[in-house]
Length: 124
Image 1: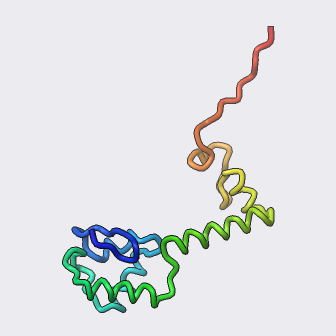
Image 2: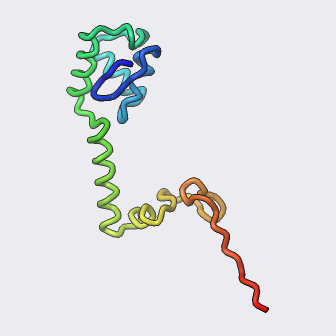
Image 3: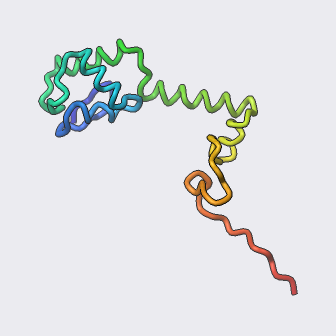
């Protein structure tokens, strides 16, 4: 596996499909990076030379994108800010409920987790 910007990317795939393995880089960003680096998107990652890998890394660093750890930290700080100011979105994040207006009476199982049965106790 080739190592690019601290991330292992698969050798057997096309470079266009391998770059999105880096957190923060998607398909459209990949096309821009490869165009800037002057590399054919159809070439396999394992066939890239060290010079070409260096050009890709240089193009990513010059683009000003936040990737991997920096991006994760930035997103985490945004969520921490929302929860600290007690806004609606922050409260929803804190309670592990859907944040963007979805209904919760019947759906939202992914966010809420496994059902917790609330039963009525029988009295004798």
